[in-house]
Amino acid sequence: ILNVEQSPQSLHVQEGDSTNFTCSFPSSNFYALHWYRWETAKSPEALFVMTLNGDEKKKGRISATLNTKEGYSYLYIKGSQPEDSATYLCASGQDAGNNRKLIWGLGTSLAVNP
Amino acid sequence: KAGVTQTPRYLIKTRGQQVTLSCSPISGHRSVSWYQQTPGQGLQFLFEYFSETQRNKGNFPGRFSGRQFSNSRSEMNVSTLELGDSALYLCASSATGISGNTIYFGEGSWLTVV
Image 1 (cartoon, rainbow over the protein chains, first blue to last red):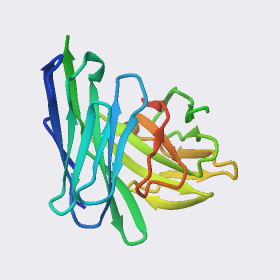
Image 2 (image 1 turned 180 degrees about the vertical axis):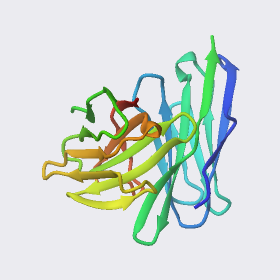
Image 3 (image 1 turned 90 degrees about the horizontal axis):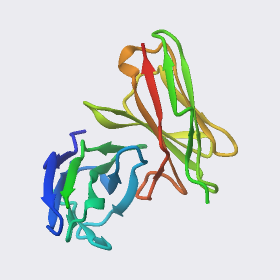
Image 4 (image 1 turned 30 degrees about the vertical axis):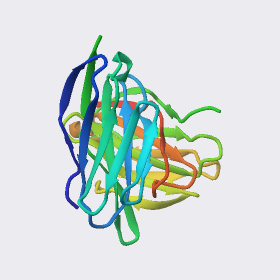
């Protein structure tokens, strides 16, 4: 199983900017793509779970898309706020016969300056 | 509704010892999965338990084991601790499992091996 890769590794934006991150994953044996938001000293917080090619999900100012054929997902944040500062993780669900695993990327660290 | 609870939150062990970590899932959730977080490797999937049975497994050595009780509480055990086992151990619960469903994380147990 190949790695899940996230880019960029870190990002600094100004309040009000819109931004997006990429998660690349192996398209073979795929079953689900998870996005999580992880603030320092807190638990990772679920944002989206997507399973179908072309899925688009939205939660407030945050949205995500999924392309399972080419193996990527985008996370968009519109009008970034300082409280959006966190590490954004994606995880790809890989199905290897009778064993399913969640393979995690290293995350994109977002800092929003007021 | 109470969240996922992990105990202990912090512990220090000596090389060669063993450690047991505990996880109480959200009420009604039958799946508990475990993850190791280290700075260089990111989040890595250890295993998932569902209704007292290990359902899915990551690529960790046999020193890492777990179990789940009839009330869905889970324990993870690491035997013959090595320095490299120092990490944040997270557990997560889900109603039906890691297969395309949202998983909810606890705050983690910080293990330091000296």
